[in-house]
Length: 371
Image 1 (cartoon, helix red, strand yellow):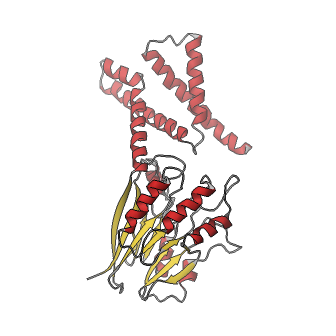
Image 2 (cartoon, rainbow, N blue to C red):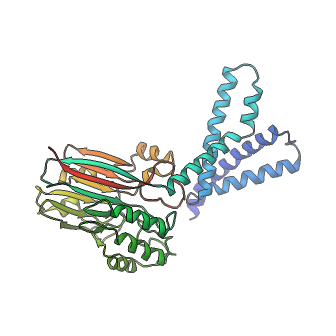
Image 3 (spheres, rainbow, N blue to C red):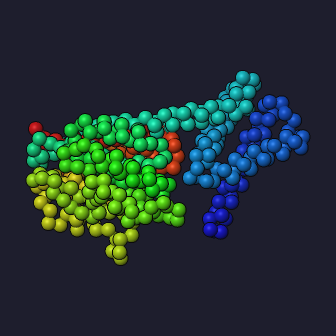
């Protein structure tokens, strides 16, 4: 804990001094005398508040402050270029830049768009083709990362469930993080009751995510209570399990890679597919979009995941790609010539009530044989 505080201290100090410059600039633009003690004190108080509040990355306040910081830093650079390229004094630009309105307004737009994006659930469609015999094909609905309690209530979830029920799906896949540590016990029971009632030919299947089971003190339900609620809702849990749906389709549900299972961890995809008829279409469910090369080599035809939230807060989606945090971030990915992957951005998101990098969605996947 002390080491973490020492690591964060330089960041806090840096943010405080940056926002001291930011608020001082605004004060000067509005003709306040920045040499007066009252103005100095106000600027320092605002700067310290912004610096300290920017550190709690699990709170929306930090996201707002960081947006203001990044955008204002961009305008500092633009202001430097304006001064270099335009030799004469530009009074209008000087006032616009000085008052700090642009980073504040753009941040407000981000928040409004992100809020609307989070609360407007869309349907996203993909079609994948295979040389294998899949009969008349399959329709799979993929849902992940509901993190129930962040943005969706029972009415909205029921509306979405009923909508999915009209799609003639062969199965509904719940690909993890349906709940998290902030979901109440009643919300946990409610979300699975609603999703478990979603109509499909073969039913609703579920794999654990890294947030579903209690992972720190403060949760209102145990892992056992979670398991019982899921099963009582008629949902089948796949936890390093392999099942045949019919003569053409095998479903593989993996334990989450972040969960400790005994001394050996979760089973490898090679272990799970040992003895499986490779002429069948193999649909693999894994909350975190990782081990793509292993899945392709082992014989998976399609890998479905969530976890990334499509980045959730722009530009985190680009940071995920640059630092290769996951094998896939969002959308349809071709692992190799025989294996596809689809990563959903999720029905909601984690912690923050906004999504600026991707939509809130459920995914409809049509699996068809090549003609």
